[in-house]
Each structure stands twice: as structure tokens, then as C-alpha cells.
Length: 201
Image (cartoon, rainbow, N blue to C red; front, side, top):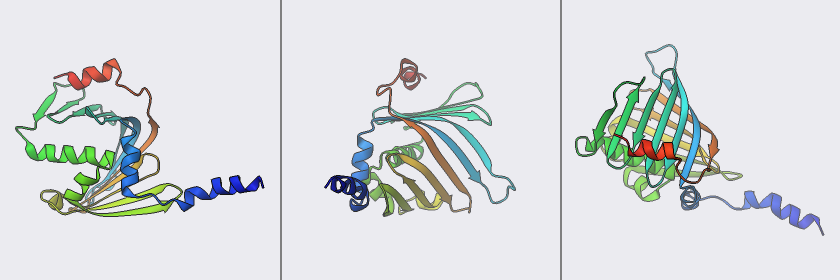
């Protein structure tokens, strides 16, 4: 008789197929995620791919912090109104939503990707969501709006509890793959340094 609960426990991940709505709910319960990233960009005219790595933070209320450590330092802060970029400690470059609305359409979309925001995704893509079993999922996105359909042939997201990979395939035949690891949900609020960085500039 004791085997029955164990069998139910073992079989339940396979019995419950995940849906896009459940994925969005899962991500909604993660208001703040930090992770390590490894990015590889394969450009068809270059013999070797371009690689970079660093740390990122996505906060539902504040935006995105992207800290590239190698091959050179670059920090990027995106919120609803500004993009602030600092390369190798130089003076910050600030772009506002007012001066570059197209950039902020993409910024809004980027945050929607991290949060599996179904409404925003459906406004911009044809969606193919696949349950891969054991809680794993794959989300293929084909752009349906301009300028996205002029830039990207398709986007592919995959993961389990967290978003683990993003692959961007552009119209030029180039491919960018970002792998996220070492996901952390704590501390559950921004540190003093993180708050300062969102507030700066």
C-alpha cells in the first residue's frame, strides 16, 4: 500500500501538462530573478562566434539590469522610460522612450519574454507553445508585427521552473543564444546597490 503515494508522486509530473497560462503564473510568482548568463552570437561572416557572459536581474516592477563582465564590461539598465548603457566605465549613454519609441517597444517585449506575458506576446507573435514533459517547455515565437518581423525570423525560449535559454534568429541568418543559469530568487527585494542603479542617471 505504501507504494501507491510514491507512484502518484513519480507519475504526477508526467500527468500534468504545462500550459502557457500556467507558465505565466509560474513567472508571476517570481517578481525578482537574478541569474548568470552566457551569450553566444554566431554571425555568418565571422569564423568564430562572439561570446560574452555576466549577471542579469529582472524585476517585474523596476525593469532589467544586464551586467556583462567579459570580454569587456558593459552595464545596461532598462525601465519603462529609459535605457542607460555604460561601456568600460565611460560616460553613460541615456536613451529615453520619448526619443526612441521603437527601442522601448522592444524593451517592453523583452520584459514580456522574461515574464511569459501572454497578452503582449500574442500582440506581437504567432505562438507555438510545447510541453516537453517533466515540467519542461518550449516556446517558439514568429513575429507578426513591424519592425520585429523585419529583424527576426523567430525567437525560441525554453526552460523549466525558470527561463533557461533564449535563441534569437535574425533575418540576416545570424543567431544569438543566451543561456541562463544559477537562478536566484533571494533576496526577494532589491539591494541598496540595485535600487541605486535603477534610480541613477
